Amino acid sequence: MFARLVQRLNDIQITEVLQLIGRKGREVIRAMFPRLDTPAGAAPESWRKVVEEVRQRPVTQTLRYSGEPWTVAKFHIGALVRQAQAVDAVIVLECAVGDTLVEDTVLLRVHGGRPLAETRLRQAIEVARERTFEQDPKYPLRLLVDIAIKALSPAINDPTTAVQALDQIEDLLHRLGRRALDAGCANDNQGTLRLVFPAPTWEDYLTLAFDEIRQYGASSVQVMRRLRSALLSLLESATEAGRKDAVQHYLQHLNLVVEHSVLDPEDQVMALQEDRQGLGLSRRHAEP
Image (tube, rainbow, N blue to C red; front, side, top):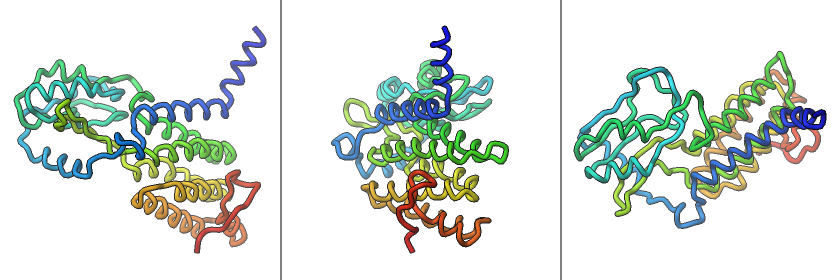
């Protein structure tokens, strides 16, 4: 019993919690997004144009939520595609996985075709009392960021934990950077677009991963150095020009944050260095 107790205590240590969240994030990324270097990852460039065209078609049905606040946990994509195909329509989901639904929230709109059975449509949108990892790669990032910013609060003042959270965040972003993220469409077996649903962009992931940590950690040399290391690593690994530009923008913003922080000039020089450990092993200075 004592050995099991020790194991349980070990399991709730912050390092174990961070690794568990990171593992869940890697699983959902692997399950949801094809790699860019595979045929499945080569999304048609015309998808965005097709989506805009779909939204111009007449709306034949609007489905709204009714009930207590619950969270979207999962979409049954196959079921929605089959329902849209049966009436030659396109379903546009107006809610995203992770959204909290309140009374009268628009769940979806049907464009073209004829109205579908509301019961079947509602069954295809699975809700839960709280967010889940399934189909929601934003959720592990959200949890990791929450841990980091709580560690940076004046009451706790633990930048090392924030750096450990950034280790997992950087790993997840590297994996997302190699994946096709513009996956907010689904076709039927004939290749016809039948479903459109909200999907985060690369910029959305960067915002979620870095903005709050940068804001709450602006006075921590350790956190600034670890953030710079993560961004430089992502800049080197990004394969698409648009994604590189987004990371470069974050690096420039980080320079401005350090420049206008409460750190004195000597500490600012330290904060502008890259260090994967936060403090311990300087590698290079910020680009001019």
